Image (tube, rainbow over all chains, first blue to last red):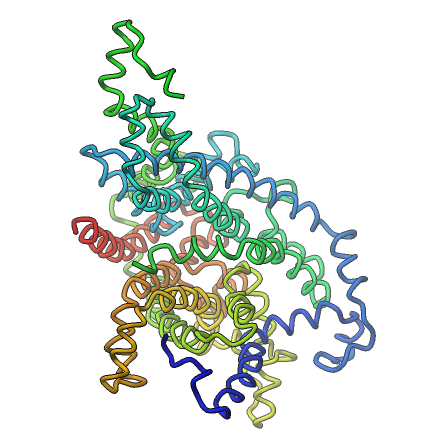
Length: 282
Length: 305
């Protein structure tokens, strides 16, 4: 193990490390902790310039209650869910199929199609912006959740195909050969042999795509406008415009907006990290 | 299960059976490729076309040849954006050594270390919009923590986001926060897989600290470094959210980057100049293309092995 395990070092070093660890974490998360403190303060504290002192009263419930009951926030959150969940399902379905095709079969265009997906996944969003916005307008889907979902599915399929294909390549190919010798149809091999083995990849990708889409801001701004279709990342800016300088409410709103992916991460940590670090180990 | 696929003695079935393996991949690829082509591949070429036009997004576009690119050459805002993009690219790469540093710091087995690792990773999971808000308040000249801390050392308040000299660096620092967390998790996973025997062998040869890191550990972390490099470069060139949230490109357009300037030109302030915006996007795309070509080339070499 590198660096040398702390247990093998002198007691003093161990104690220093143990003391330093929480301190480092505190420093690392300082900007975030500040916002959390803001979100439980009463509005009056900001008027009195009591920014960093002890809260004059604990108003956590009032602030978060206001966010949920007196603003459009629940609406935006619901929109985010209605955009994120169909996207996850759609692009997992599409990329399981493309990944299967590219991972199992040998045909001439294989590597080229694969590289098309990988390259497309790296392009800057701006090169797609004008045509995609135009296409969405032509389809009559501008300012709808469907318009956003369709684009997200298409774009995320690039990344997911890369992931699925590499995952399928690592499966034992003998399984598929054995099934073929048995005379199993190819689509049945996909459904009954390969798909069950891909569960870890499906889980990892679901969590990752969930986070990516939930946190998307650019496309939300380009393809939607109003509270009826905007997800929470775009909604938070209108929320902040509504509560200008009400830092306690803006902080509470930001925390609410950030929470779902955070919860997802803590619940599915293993899969999340497996997805992100794909390829980081040989 | 096997029953259904047994040959049934019609001619058509047997043709399908003979060609099944050749045709199936195309059937499986069709929906994904179709979607990807319509929404990603074709728009890239369309953007090239639009960049040769003068178009407000509604009326008839007029073909103007390379006029948009000529205008770019005389546009000081374009050069400001380009310069800032270079800063982003260079400074964003600091996320890689910083991530490695934190990963080495956390690669221990004391109690509770798993929670520490998760919490250090935290910033990456939060949306950039929230990161932007958090850092806007962190930098606030009236009450921001940064200036409170500077005050302890007697340093005057700095309005980071209001000063053209500091603004880009302030935003890059905010971007480095989640990016470092990402690189950290890549390296933590990589460190997990480092061969312990080689480390022991290195110890026997009296390799320590930096030499051990440089000659024995880092070569084994090469795949992690490659991915960290890829995601950091892409992240740097995609920077949009933070700028949009923190400064809207200001003050006086000094924190614009190409991705934000393109958006501004095409969809806000300056009216809908789709052609000019597309030209900026093409420049950004060509910059990215150098990196994409390099990434694909590296992947191609791996595939050949």
